[in-house]
Amino acid sequence: MTATAGLWLAVIASGLYHGVNPGMGWPLAVSAALMEGGRGALWRALAALAVGHFAAMLAILLPFAAMNLLVEWQREIRIGAGGVVIALGLWLLVNRRHPRFLARIPPARLALWSFLVATAHGAGLMLVPIYLGLCGPAETDTGHMAAAELMARNAGVSLGVALVHTVAMIGAGGAVALAVHHWLGLKFLSRSWFNLDILWALSLIAVGGIALATAI
Image 1 (cartoon, rainbow, N blue to C red):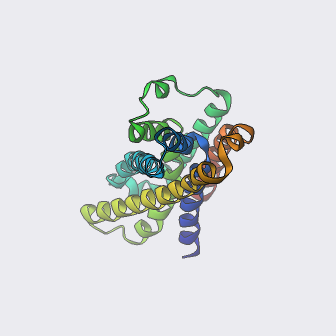
Image 2 (tube, helix red, strand yellow; image 1 turned 45 degrees about the vertical axis):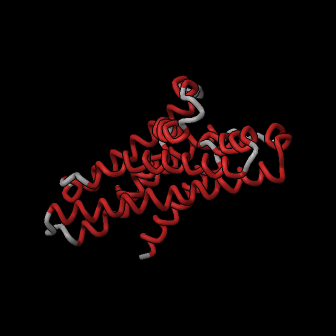
């Protein structure tokens, strides 16, 4: 139970971290509110960002729920997932440029932008080792379960992970966006802009390393 609680806390913490990161879109919500001159625009923008981020998490996590091999090869899959996360973190450390295609997406399509930016930056991939850890204990004790039942359980876990992570993400990002829009203003945004690209890459490496250590 302690290990499971720790994994769920990791899901929440990663969501809070993603939400505070400007690269996940909260400045776009501030921009929408300023351009349209109302708080409603900010809420609509945050809702679109949440939908896109949630879809990106599910797109990464749900395929693992359908893997019948997850029971027999769970340890090997966790090791592989940890290695991929570390590799992505190292790549982001070397290559600092953001994908150019993201700049071509119209501002009105915030949900699509949020989906693509979360996918391109490995936000969903970061959750894979945590998700596999949550599935692991149940599968170890229930290897005799029918594949359909096991897939349903894993799908429920993936939905839960994606939902909890997205709620934490949009809560943190929304809080920052509201603070900037209502109290801090654009001067704070221009003077106190923080770039989390390096920290993002290092966090991927850290999550991958932890996943490898716990799997091995």
